[in-house]
Image 1 (cartoon, one colour):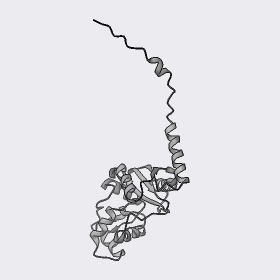
Image 2: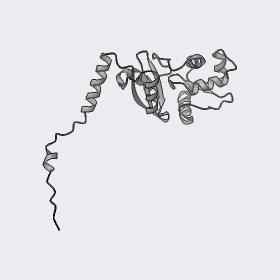
Image 3: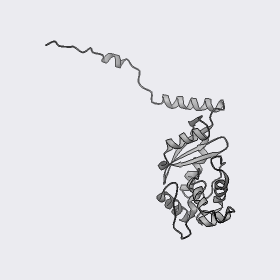
Length: 205
């Protein structure tokens, strides 16, 4: 039987330079800086850990445009933003530092209202009208879907209020979790029933 001798190629791998795992991050930072300089960064995003899971935050130059729960699929949300707003979207945490700071303060019990510029372009018509009324529901309080419908100027549009809350692009910051059923039960929530109860319990403490 013929014996096949494999070549000793270990010296080839020994000659390779050590991998710098920080290189890709530096390149990404350079890319973000260049995009911002040239006005090519339309949507910046980052994630932030919270008691209701990891939240995706996205902002345009106008302000915060999207907050998404992990259960909504962050990748799918980013794809949607690329289609609805612009494909020029990058992970650029600096633009969202203030939003992340205020969200951290909220979950730590040190903030009751958010003071952030908001980009409302993902909501229109009556849904937008409903969402703009939600911050009027005070921290630690709740309102029924019927009460919100009346406040928004359409007392019979209770179901439409539910739809507006279910499609709220800025949950937590725009407090749709404070809208509950007329019997006092919490009702549905874009972040899930457990997340809604967590937020209501936080504010009731």
